[in-house]
Length: 195
Length: 195
Image (cartoon, rainbow over all chains, first blue to last red; front, side, top):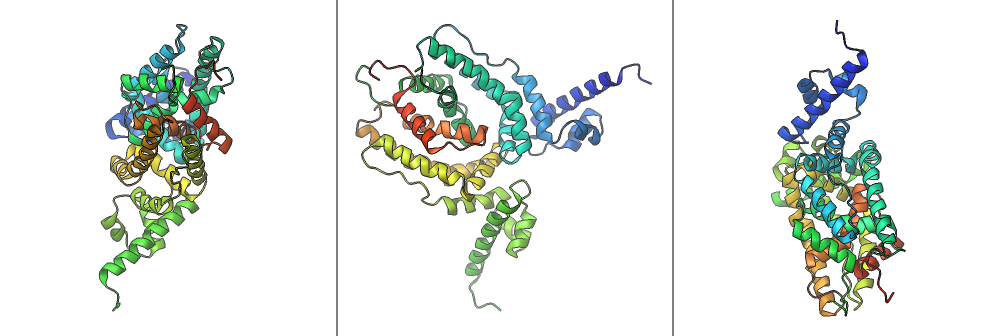
């Protein structure tokens, strides 16, 4: 008999499952990832996995949250344009790592899995949006973003171009491109006589 | 023996397959769509489908192209801001129809199917980008968009916010929201003393 408490054994099994899902997704790709494969790699039964997670995507979401952590914090140097460039370069840099592979797979899967979509919203996207909103509201108080601009719209203006390129064309923007994106979102596309 | 020529029979079978895929995707959803189910509904063998298409997503792409057609043309009234609002409202309106259901499913699938991703690029996205680029270059000549702005960047600035909302939050922006998006992309987020 194991001397460990049952909840401790469960915690270790859960960690093994998440680790196995991360490894297998990198090795075989998301399409070929299976609960059977994860169970075999983690040394647990399939039913153990289904007791805790509704789908392979849900296991991978736990892995993604581990990786995301504080991968791309929102700095405050007093210069909102510079700070969003810094944050976005860090986030897009992470897109080309293991994090990006899992994040892309999950963003694909949520297009036809409503339960996973809600979990991704609640556990990853809303907390990220909340941190971005804080930085935008600060920039408004600092007079660097129009005071009447809805913060959610500002987030969509800033991050939409990155996701457009990443999800429609499977390309991540280069750092110089990110700078051009942020500059254009702040200054607009209309010709300005003073520029 | 049928009096029809073989290529004519093939064409009819192909149409039946595409129609079956469209219907089944609406009835059971993309996740449960299968080549077996499409073959049964269309009254053809599975091998007939695999001879012409590499995956269920590829069949659905043909259905999507039928639906997209000229769903959201790019008008030229001489007012680029108004014209992009008109085009985007038509496109986003189509997102809430059968077209949007298939388009969302395919944008999900291309995140882990590189062959389908290339087909979507070549057959749908690049032609759409080419038409948008023409309208942007016209707006530059009309003095309504900065002449030095890269057209692909302009497309990402304009359409990125829509896709951000649609693919990350599974929500389509309302017409009034689309107007605010386009206005903000043209005028920028920075406070302007003249506004």
